Image (cartoon, rainbow, N blue to C red; front, side, top):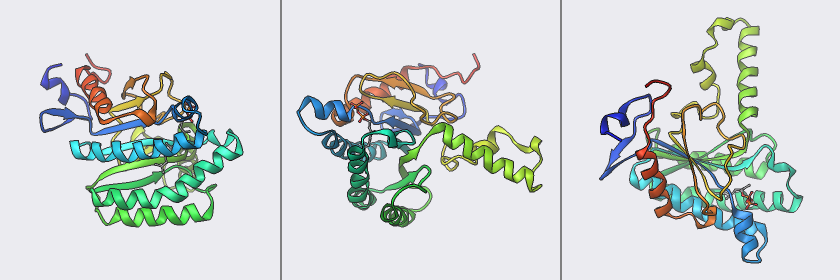
Length: 252
Ligand code: FPP
């Protein structure tokens, strides 16, 4: 891919060190359960190792110049899992969120939580407020690692539509004022560019309701590696594959 192609379209890659890196990388952290099963461990152990992988890869992304790193940690559909697995994931958020935010703050990474947080237990809400306060100290230009919790792409779009409908109803805007940009502005990701690259490990090839609106022109990268095993070398491979692609954003 010619260097000029990298700067076509609305989300140019940033050249850091020797090669360009995407501005925004998102990951569907899949394969934790299978990773644990292969080792005769409970699924929750896979999630715990997956949380460590999140910290390693998010920090690596910051180090190589990726501005936004966003992961799918708990979907609006994950409540359907057995209660003990949901409880274990909530416990992981409880134990890990603030500690991860503190250690990542030391490395210059702002941790944020995105999603419909209303159904989460009150103590996790309190943790998320603390996580936000830690991230605020880094200022608006810091590299950001966002965890999507109780996130669903359709749910997010539904909430944006409801908010816009309310604005039309109370006369703040006219229906014609609803634009692609105003819809984007009502999503959880309003403060960041759309993801350039979305990675799904573990051999599954579907989007699973992740960043549906934002992924219109994202490049997808699939790998058989299970998320707990995903290494910085795997991230390098994904970025190299991204850099070999020609993004045309519907043009020629
Ligand atoms: C999908 O793998 C993964 C999840 C539903 C949970 C992901 C959450 C984490 C890694 C924890 C992150 C938390 C923090 C605080 C960083 P799966 O369980 O569906 O795997 P399987 O397809 O192999 O069963």
